[in-house]
Length: 119
Length: 110
Image (cartoon, rainbow over all chains, first blue to last red; front, top):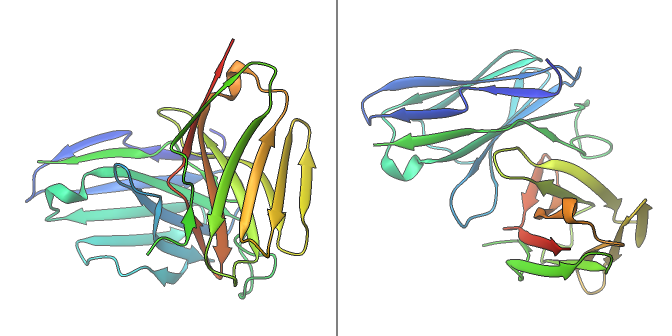
């Protein structure tokens, strides 16, 4: 496997279900991201992890719970979602850093996304 | 409030001609700008970037221009090829985050 992979590619779930999205990067990066893309909206950053530490939580509801066990893997645990949460969820990775904006979080490499439908 | 705007949702260009995709931003603190290309059923792919201290960056057929005073950047593709047909996203960096535009769908016709 190369680049950034995401599983599953498609997911249909009911509002009471619990499911998890998985992301894996094979690029040796230290920073990983979750984005949400809803119809007719720009990509919205959800979470950022740098060296396994969460550095950004963009006011995401608690029904979305990220987990980053190591620099190569990122999960998004889903619980009691709403139909309006249906969207394309994209994972990305980049070279991390010691903080600040200089030389960090530049080019991000994206996975193919998980198309989530909440019924 | 959207800080990065791509006001043209779609663009059609003939093969061999120049494609110009535009992007406007409102936050003067953005220090790095990127263009991504996205095909259906795939994630965005990094294309080209430019630092705020430069006004032009060129990579093969792709050139990005930055006009800081106008808070405007553009992506030029010349010559355009049918394989360039995709959605192009402009993104601007602020701290940890990339702020994306809604994208412009480019169609290059033979």
